Structures are given as C-alpha cells and as structure tokens.
Image 1 (cartoon, rainbow, N blue to C red):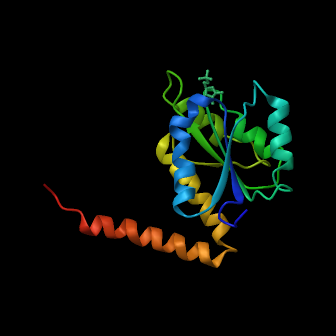
Image 2 (cartoon, helix red, strand yellow; image 1 turned 120 degrees about the vertical axis):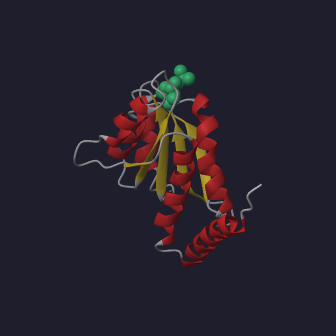
Length: 164
Ligand code: RP5
C-alpha cells in the first residue's frame, strides 16, 4: 500500500443516511492526498463495535478520527472515550431539530474527554477533513505544503470571482 493509500484518518458515522453529509470529509482528505477509511458504526446500535474500533485505531495506524452523528449524537464522545487520538465531531442535521440537537450533544462534552466540534452538516464535514489534515501536517512537511497550496487556490478563486 502506498503512503497516500494508507489510511491515516478514520471516518465513522452513525448511519448510512449520514453519508450524504459525511462524504464531504473524505472528499477534502482525498483532495489533500490523505488516505482515509469509512465505517458505519453506531453508539447505540453497535456499542461494542464502536469501542473495538476506537480502542484499536491507533495501533492500526490511524492518526485522527472523524465521527458524524445526528439526533442525540453521542458517537463522537463515545469514540473519544475509547482512544487518545484526536476526535473531530460533525453534527448531522438528520432530525426535525435540523442538527441543533446534534450540535449541542457533540459540543457539550464534559471536562476530561474532548471532542473538536465542527459546524452542522456538509460544511462541518469538509472542515473536519481539513482540520484532520492540519493536525497531521504538524509533523508532515509535504502535507503542510499541500495544505498551504490548497488555501492559496481558494484565495485565488475569490480574487478571480466575477460578478454577473
Ligand atoms: C443517528 O441517528 C445517525 O447518526 C443518524 O444521523 C440518525 C438517524 O439514523 P437513521 O434512523 O436514519 O439510521 O444514530
């Protein structure tokens, strides 16, 4: 497996229905040539599998975990409780509360087990990928350069934007 293909980031989500939002995380990582793996794991439907995945993630070579969940969104917190790896939470707007429930569930972690919480939905998922990249880039100079170039390209898009 080449370095780019070796997964460094684990992306998990509570349901297949979350993929509509969470695919933005894998897309951001792929753009920066960071390998990732995607799993459906639920804190309430498959609690043992979540604990197993999170507690073995570091030894399997993962460096950052991204967890997306909706409703009473306890997945990111449960993942964080089972690993020392940095965990990034993405609130999914999957209920009638439009993600406010997920946001508050994820961001209000009690002291001691942190989860870095992103914005609700696709923007949050994309930022989760970029934030994972920023964490890995601290010790990976080539990735830091790719990330800097990615930001320059986004700035150039704004400068080049033409109004109709
Ligand atoms: C959460 O419940 C999932 O993260 C999802 O956002 C929400 C609804 O899941 P489904 O009933 O669509 O599978 O566990």
